[in-house]
Image (tube, rainbow, N blue to C red; front, side, top):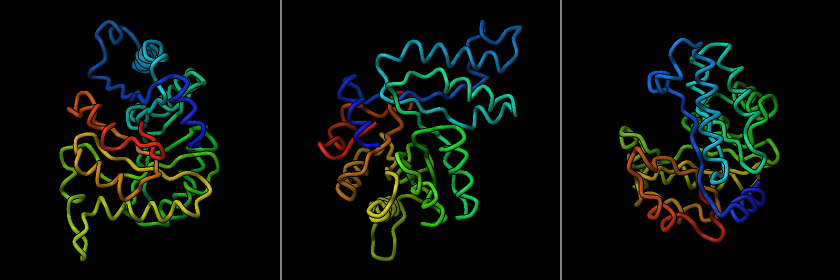
Length: 236
């Protein structure tokens, strides 16, 4: 997986990951008026893909926006992913997190049924909630470490008993888990916390990072690359 990502980034000279978050309330009026919502979402995503394909190393559909449309939304998600270019990674922004037995079926759905290359997961339930995802060969499981949302500090800046911030403890644990994983482990680290980004890169020097928060949330892409991009540590 890392070799494939590195090849894509070098060939296209980009580290851009395009999020597909089709909020019905924010779709352009001409797309919404007089149409089924599923059709509007499909066309909106198709327009984004067409405009960004030359510049994208990956696409990241947010499952919530498609699942909210009901069964038809999953059909739209399938159609959108089928339309993505071959020279990009496909990341499921699903943020799954459940006990091991349940996680196995979430992983099966994302990687085997839907054909995604990568998935975001929450580590709150511990190693057994992440391991089923890491058992899938030629995939990358991005574990939430320091996220980009306003409430991230509520828990992620709390310290463990030895004084280590929780986001760094997560990164250290995932780096350890990655050593015997079949698939690739990565970390989600938000662009809105550049100091944490640099610290986590030191904790996990070779893990790929998925870095949301550039753009509307105010993250600086140059600061992200300076803090996290290394020869061994890829960034999206």
